[in-house]
Amino acid sequence: MDPRLETLASFVVAGMHYRGRNEQEEIPELWRAFWPRHADNDNRLQPGVSYGVIYDFEEGSGVFNYLAGLPISEGGELPDDMLAVTIPGGTYVTFECTLPTLMETNRFIHEEWFPGSG
Image 1: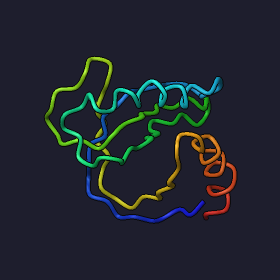
Image 2: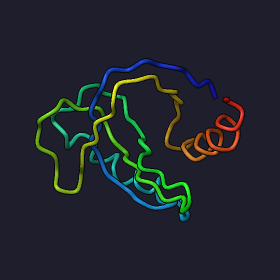
Image 3: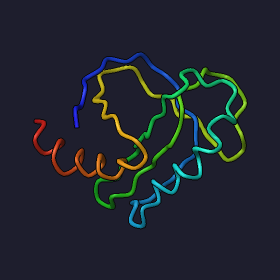
């Protein structure tokens, strides 16, 4: 894994949402449900680019929100079962992966990279 530090301007990601702990591999299943529908969004900005966004992580319970989505332009209509999240501008660590390596990448981030990153 080769994480990159990137400074990004604010942007919007739209897609399908999950809330929980991913105890039953719900996130890969979310991507499998989302990917055939990714073209349903007419205001997507970067073909071939998608984001897995974790937000509102609850330290004690381990529950978090996760959005499997695409960067979009603001203001467009979304299908009823999708939502949009605004990602604030700032410095981010980017980990590239594919759907088959998603859980391996997530494990690497939380068990190896975070503890050793300082």
